[in-house]
Image (cartoon, rainbow, N blue to C red; front, side, top):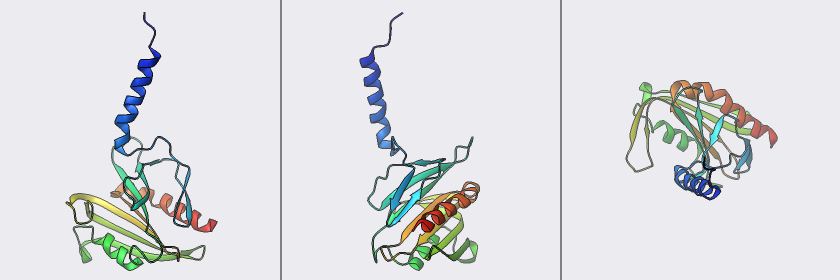
Length: 185
C-alpha cells in the first residue's frame, strides 16, 4: 500500500482553493465586522460571503437546517449624503417587486434604538433580482426585510431577501443584530 504523497495533497488542496475562490466564499468568517460607524456581530449560523463589488460592504447567506433554500443579507454604506435618503431607499426596495401598491404585502415602521432612527421595511411577493439597469430574474414567494440606520456619517442599509418562510424566521435575528450594534454606540 502506497502512502499519500504530501506534494500531491498540497497541490490538490490549493487547486480546490483556486476553484472555490471565484464562488465568493471567504475562507474565514469574522465574528464581528464594521459598516460605516457601526460594529455588528455576525450571527453564528450566518455564512460570511466575500463581497465582489465596492457597493457592498458586507454580505452573508442564511439557511435553514436541512433545506436547500437560502436568503442573502447585504450591507451597504455610501458615506455622508450619498445613497439617497431613507424614503428613496424604501421606494427602491419596494420597487424591486413585480407587485405594486395594494397588491404588494408591505410594511414600513420606524423605531429609535440607542438614539438612532431605524426604518424597517418588509415586503412579500415576486422579487425581481438583478443589478440596477440589468436583466431581472423573477423570484416568486420571496420576502425582503430591510433596515435603514440613519447616521450623519452616512446611513447603513441592510437588505435581506429570500424565501418568505426563511426571511420571516430570520427577522428576530436580524433585528437583534441591528439593535445590539446600536446599543454599543
